Amino acid sequence: MEIVATNPAKIFGLHPRKGTLAPGSDADVVIFDPELEYVCSSATEHSRVDYCLYEGVRVRGRARTVVARGRVVVRDAEPVAVPGRGSYIARRGVSWP
Image (cartoon, rainbow, N blue to C red; front, top):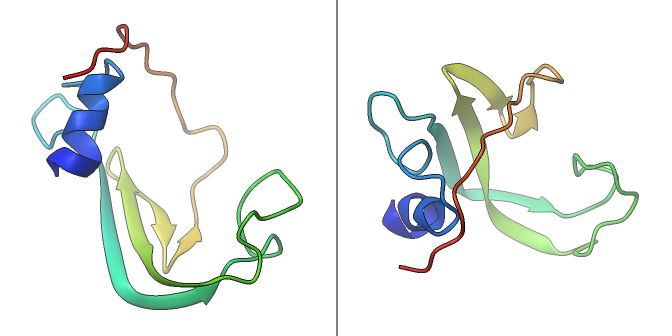
């Protein structure tokens, strides 16, 4: 957890609000399926740009489910969040550990 959550949150001045599973923290929980395979494509990616840097590349491993602030926002590797439910989090300055 430190490599993918805690340390980046500390570097970008967001810890302990982000990067830890603790009371008062705003953690997103990701259920990752290392066997799920898919091909990257701008037609299937969920972005506002019309291209994919990795177009046609076969990838193994993908977030299957994501829970943010107690609500499922990704289900079966597809976004289900309602637009506008995000929130801005002010941060302190960047610091390297």
